[in-house]
Each structure stands twice: as structure tokens, then as C-alpha cells.
Length: 88
Image (cartoon, rainbow, N blue to C red; front, top):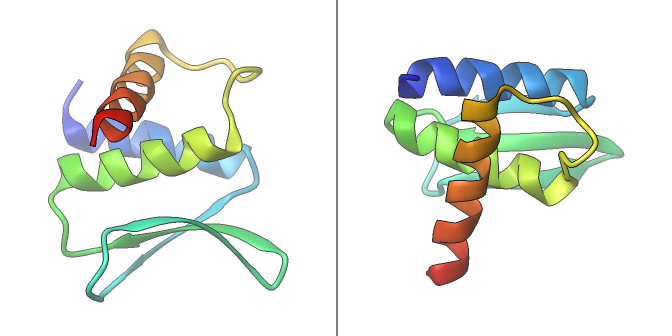
């Protein structure tokens, strides 16, 4: 699955989970936050698609996806990104 496809799948997952995604400019990668009771994932829009997917995957994992059906490739990507983050 391409980074663009993964990003689309992750965006759909976030939407189904009631989490908005905003792509903004700035000096950051992004992550999960709560803004005035709204659950958001903020992502730097200048990042490459693979890095955007990584940021969204890590943010979604913070919320938890154990009870949600995911395509196997998407679940594997999220688990891989969590593993990479844990090593960093």
C-alpha cells in the first residue's frame, strides 16, 4: 500500500473515531491534541506523505484502535510506527 493510500485509510479511521485532522504550516511534525473539547490530529502539511501517515498513525494509536476493524496492512503500519517510536 502506498503512503498516500495509507494516509487516506488513516484519515478515514480518524473520521470514524470522531477525530478531526488538520493539515497546517509550522515548525512541527504533528500529533494528537484536544482543542476546546474537540479531538484533533494536527499534521504539518509540508511533510512527505509517508511522514504524514506516520504522524497520523502514532496519533491514532494514542487514542487506541484495539476494538476497531482495520485492514491488516493499516494495522501492521500502525504497529510498526509504534515500534519505531518506542525505539527512538
